[in-house]
Image: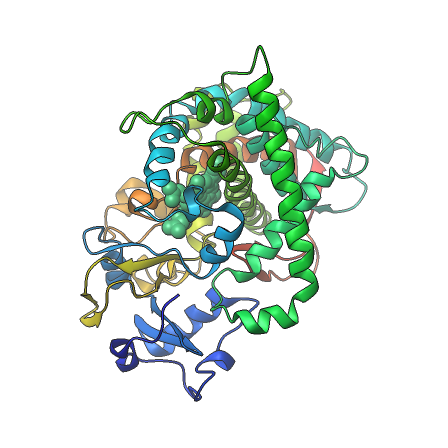
Length: 465
Ligand code: HEM
């Protein structure tokens, strides 16, 4: 969060900027990133928005986006939604300042657990959990439409909880929802509201008074549960050794030789449950919507899946099989181009510098607007069309570098990328093998933002093949 900087006042900004409230009326609190992209059509690749004394530079052109990813001049900015999330996650990976010792300590300890090779250790758990989703959907066949995003969210929350901390929410078991899962979900929604909005705390304090009270109770409850999990682990004479919690409790940072303290481990657990699930569930939901509305793409993906597991068999994917599903992987890549679940990421100059030729001061808040750049004409004549073959290597080579960044950039880019891709490809393979997907008649995609992008009210019909 930055007080208005004189250099930014020279940048284009939305029409009718008002004294005091600035551009407040030109923004859309329910779909802030999408509104930023709409402004970029009129205002160009770099512009400013201002609300009261806070201002933000929006970087929406491909050249300038590549420039703001230059790690020598720019780094991550922990502001806006991330500042709000920091109240929950403290110095966990997503919300730590890069200069904080706990960021590099946790990064060094956890990065090996997220390598491509490490996915082998999680493969069976991911497969078992994806099968639970498919079993749950089997029970819905012929019973009407499935609520896609609720089920993909349950799936990805289960996966990260199981491989991360040995915790089971039993999302597909029926019965009452786990109170912990309910508190976590309310927490996501609360933090997500801050997202890409420019915060005005005194207005929030009045309008969201009750939600803030509920949120504080949820945070205390979730922290208590996680603290109990950590204590139980420490007391366990024969604790699991193969999950993220075990790694954090037992491994020293190879650089400093230090361990993470318990408060930081608790923050990481809560942050992983959050960062590790809404993102992948959104990816799966959008991919399912696009596959249902593009039957020719679904057909091609299914042909590839059937080459490994012919129709009528029960797929039993081995770890290495997932990497053979190259067309399905292009479906995911193209889904994340059109609907980058994180529609932007925040950056700041680490020295006084320029962006697109405009001066910017050290620390100035900026958003690299992935959502706009991923649909720029630089992608070809019809950038809004769903065309997975854009990601064929020979076509990818014809594009300028640095314009596709659904997982962020540089040292603060996504640590969970391989996990997200592995679970997405595997889950889609099981679903497409078993079902024909039918869009709900009359459904029109509406994209809501709660930090991440989500397809509102998405339901699909399933027909067992
Ligand atoms: C398709 C799914 C995903 C997308 C699109 C995504 C996107 C991103 C983006 C854009 C960032 C950078 C944020 C910034 O610069 O401020 C990020 C960071 C991060 N992501 Fe993901 N993510 C996904 C899945 C996951 C998963 C599955 C996990 C964990 C299990 C995860 C954990 C994290 C963490 C811990 C960070 C912070 C890394 C750091 O700053 O050191 N993400 N993610």
